[in-house]
Image 1 (cartoon, helix red, strand yellow):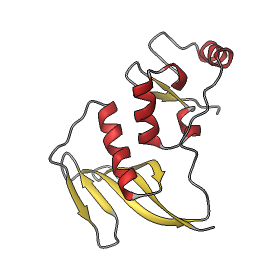
Image 2 (tube, rainbow, N blue to C red; image 1 turned 120 degrees about the vertical axis):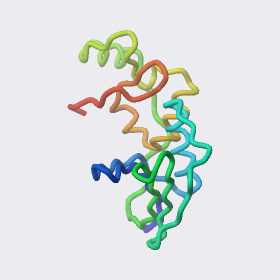
Image 3 (cartoon, rainbow, N blue to C red; image 1 turned 135 degrees about the vertical axis):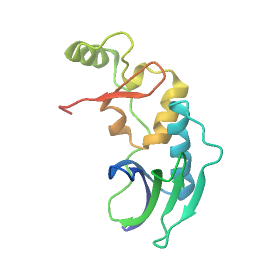
Length: 148
């Protein structure tokens, strides 16, 4: 069944870099995902500008015109990713930590404090994606696992 989704992208207009953050059921959820990302990174942009483009996308200009978030509306047959992460058990967490030689300040999603897990789920809106990263003590992604 076809559904409408709203996908967040971060763009650097100077270098042409465009990174997908997540897809959501509504534009409001997508905006909240961007704000959760800012909160995780201790960034605050009270004067961010919200501009609608001719194509209908919403652009959020938060620092200057070269750095934007863009929310694009699209139709898809695919369901949205699950927004509830099933926690890995302690043995699996220990195994992953050992396999990758993670230091004490590199945490898996399950090891983060609940407020950070909640913000990450808002920011990424994809339980599988959350299990593909290592995070710092404040819930910011450090690196992505290569073999997942």
